[in-house]
Amino acid sequence: NAGVTQTPKFQVLKTGQSMTLQCAQDMNHEYMSWYRQDPGMGLRLIHYSVGAGITDQGEVPNGYNVSRSTTEDFPLRLLSAAPSQTSVYFCASSYSGQGVNQPQHFGDGTRLSIL
Amino acid sequence: GESVGLHLPTLSVQEGDNSIINCAYSNSASDYFIWYKQESGKGPQFIIDIRSNMDKRQGQRVTVLLNKTVKHLSLQIAATQPGDSAVYFCAENNAGNMLTFGGGTRLMVKP
Image (cartoon, rainbow over all chains, first blue to last red; front, side, top):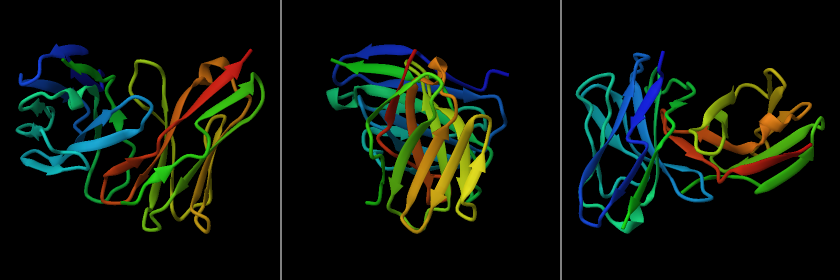
């Protein structure tokens, strides 16, 4: 059981480039989310999804797009990378996102640098 | 907006002692709280959770206390071990499943 898998683990981009961070989970979780973690800080929610075909914005959604075509996958797209998006990105999943409180399971992150 | 915060950014304890990590939250509507442990280069790992209808919950070597009157959450680790060295985050779930994280406390265990 792999849990939450994120790829790539590291990436360097130039300003203005676009890319997609991949996230997959094999636990049949309905809820998936993306966070960013800046140095010395906690995690901030970017986007989340409560099920296939449903996505919503979190605290810091600007500059990012998401889609949820399957239960397993929740990719995060950077449309035009900016240095302010240099961060560590974490994907997480849990059983349900409809008001049911469950601990989220996190991947090991993608470390992204924008030059 | 409302946020979850921590009193101590760094906590240094002797191996074998008990550790207490504190967290203050400001959203009185929050009904679920979680503690995560994050080791260097890894994602947050779930430690223990507590719902707002409880005051205390115990796990293996860990205890979480919730004081709703003063909006305070604490994580107690018994007989702290070197493997407990990490950054600890509290988080609150106040909107369906949108976690709000605190800034984190680094726990350093001295041998």
